[in-house]
Every structure is written in structure tokens, then in C-alpha cells.
Image 1 (cartoon, rainbow, N blue to C red):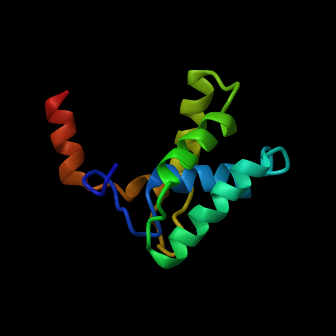
Image 2 (cartoon, one colour):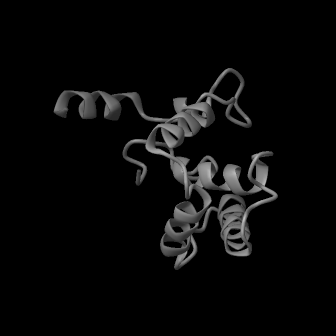
Amino acid sequence: MDGTLCCETDPGYFDHKLLYHRVMEDPDYKDKASKEEKETAAIIKTYFETGEYPSGLDVKHGTAVATAFKGMTIDEFDAYVKAYRDQPMEGYAGMTNGQAFYKPMLEVVDYLI
């Protein structure tokens, strides 16, 4: 997820975009999001806007993901990620969030599996 498999600058990593969506845009969750989750989402938004990866975001992101998706089963989380993946990618006509992965690298992963 470091730019090898997916775009890392438009505006950011898929997993950061997913968390931002969950905390700030998901109508079923955004009003339940904790203060810490919202603070992390604000840091992610700044990262999206500036392109500069903030120190300490890895830990904050991991903690926020753990709490924002707490209580979901693996199947529920898988369905949530796939639903987000299939949403239109902002700024690109006809492209979904899940199409921002580099096809040649996905082919390598498929080959290795």
C-alpha cells in the first residue's frame, strides 16, 4: 500500500481515504465518530490537501481504524470496503475508488498467490 500497488497521491492511500469516508462522510457512522477519530480524519484531510505525510499518522490511523470499524464482523468489513471501492472516485470521470490500483502490480500479486 506504499504506492507499489495503489496510487499514493490522489489524494492519498486507499486506506486513508476509507477511514476519512467512514468518519466524515458515512451517514450511518459520522455522527457516532469519536473525537480522536475526527482529529485523525482532520490530519488525513490536511495530508490530502498538502501532499505532505505527517509524522505520527501511522499510529493515529491504525488506532482510528480499530475504533471506527470496531464491532464489525470480517464479512461486514469486507462488504463495507467493497462498497466503498465501487463508489466513483472524486475528480475522475468513470473511475471508481477501487480502480486506482496499478494493474501490473495486481497481476504480480495474482501470480504470487
